[in-house]
Length: 127
Image 1 (cartoon, helix red, strand yellow):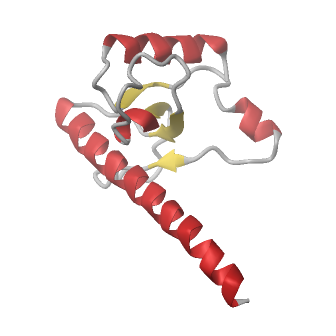
Image 2 (image 1 turned 90 degrees about the vertical axis):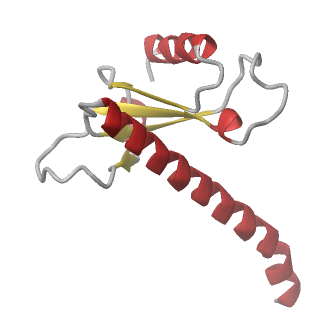
């Protein structure tokens, strides 16, 4: 990931301290480190995105600590942010709907991971 992308996101979230999600155009080679390691960058496709050949040229940046509403973390420069590729959002309504869907998807995934983590000791004890 380029330092420029990280700095841009950091500055944007500092100027929007209550924001959970930022949508922006993807920086050149932003996900190249993942690709070089043989991984496919995650993609978020909003429910209204129906164009079959549309390219995921935008990025959704999710501030996980803000999503979890961790108290006292808004001034912490070491934020935890998730970046996923997404499709161009052309209107304010699309931004709003995509933001809601993405927040729900990430929150559900975090909750599922937490439940799996809590169930792991019980499964190990049963084995």
